[in-house]
Length: 360
Ligand SMILES: Cc1ncc(COP(=O)(O)O)c(C=O)c1O
Image: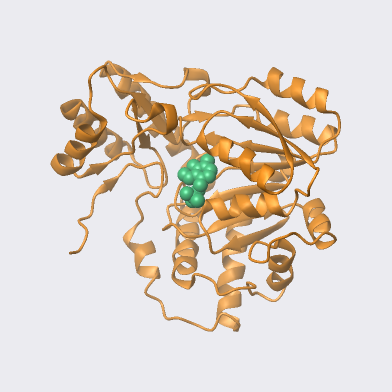
């Protein structure tokens, strides 16, 4: 049975244009040939513009988690210390990944729905002295909270000799993160969120100092070995067989983004999120996050007492063809999350609010 087309208001994957979907029908080509080289180079050039970097871009055939695995396993060696603000599911996973790689994660913790303050982070960094890397989840998709101090955090980490890694999987494109200007060494984004391509590819920006480090220090992973990707990249190849149809779609989605312009896309996300928060509050509902730390790409909303999460989302889907997500961890059953990503428009926001109003 073929799936019906719905309005996908998930915090990823998100709606994808017909034009991008069609791009996946292009023929399979030799991934060791010149057509693939030009496809890969096109993706890299267009993504450098989004990362705002002169550094290299690695294109991984994996979901966002693979991108973060690469960002951890290539930098962390047994005994290394990494500072990790933990304020939701994805930052918790990140701290655990540091530990799986044999590192020590110094967690700067706050409750789900809030964020560690910059002062708390600075205190932890000062106390630590020298450390290997700062790992920041910019946008906690699990709670709808975004860190507001990425640039300052990068500055203090660099002052302590640390690499700066940002998980911008659910934010880049909806937010501007000028990686070179802010001193971000590795920034990771997923294809399926604000870039509005199908899921299946992670993009990583790689600074010059990371490039030097990984070339001299082989990691304990083959698939995610960044030095290998950088070396193959010089001849327009990936080390392993790429997810070709997704590469085609990603290339088209990046062209779409370039046509709109990064600044315009960022502004559209900002305006749609403002309309969503405003509408939700007018319905008498309460966003999870305080207004100062609210995410622009994921709007998490507390259910009124007695609302059944499963029933609500089922009705939204069956009666209105609109798909939103439930809560994570302590928020399971208590919160629903609306994605405000990629191709989101004011019209989609209005439709969603009207449907929420009827079903809640
Ligand atoms: C902030 C963040 N980090 C990591 C991930 C994991 O990405 P994926 O599900 O693409 O592996 C997600 C997914 O939603 C995310 O939002």
